[in-house]
Amino acid sequence: MFGEGMIDPADMADKLVRLKTDRDIIMIYCPQCSKRVEFAVTHPTADGSHYQGINVPERIQQMMEWNPKDVICYDCKRYIKVRLTLAKTRPMDLEATIGAELSVT
Picture 1 (cartoon, rainbow, N blue to C red):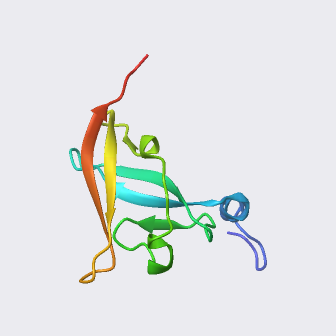
Picture 2: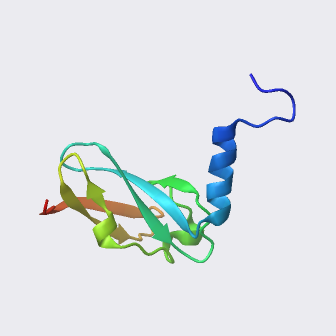
């Protein structure tokens, strides 16, 4: 569709967002309804990358931080509690459990 040397506008928008961000996105699944849940993490080398909860690179696992109130399943209208466990047998495990119900005002 686009000629040689041309870039799709949506792809360019994604690239610009990556240049401006200091957060990465982690994707997990809600333990109650199995819907996709994404939340932002910060660490010194964050560049807007997206990771699944099971494949976060080792270089950022010990440094990443997130706001627990940002981990929400909007389908269940509940917070998801995420706990990071570092183990010798596997690089990392993100355990997600159901938290408090959201207050709707």
